Image (cartoon, rainbow over the protein chains, first blue to last red):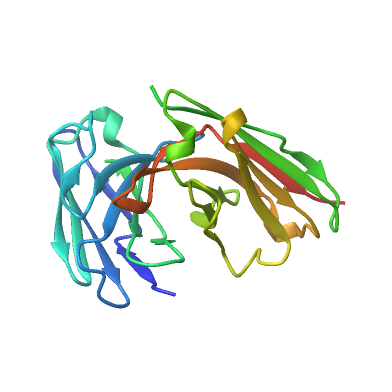
Length: 107
Length: 121
């Protein structure tokens, strides 16, 4: 199975800040990577697929980049509603696997 | 609008069985592959099972293989997860999720609200 490792596990930031979360795959997955946002008590929401494609309805302050084994999710100009947990997921092969999550907290 | 509504969760004893259901609306259910994904309390996301649109392709996580069975009824726009020989570690919120598209069949693009399964004596 492909292992996904996110860093950091948690990060504190302020409204208006720019935040970057990284995700590393244990083997190359081309651009088969997705990012999700999850708020407490809610289902995950797809933000980005194919490493850099923004899902419909997702604000443009979210962006993704990377290919192969190293990927990043960047949030430019943090908004209050962005404080949540973020997960990466490899979509290259079964079983699809998720990173352990990055908790974005208000500073 | 894509809507997925899970039901069937609850409290069950170790070794017991439970059947989860997910009713879909807002899209042509028979055209999309579906997944079950779970999340143990306070933990991350774990993919559980996948079924293709016509049920010809099915996959399971090693952690549930031989104990869980995924199925679907396209006439009823419904997805199911039959869970047996349940263990404490199966305690989780179970989400039904539709794939994003045919080209992104390993991306759960749309999720239901989840149903909680608690395995405890």
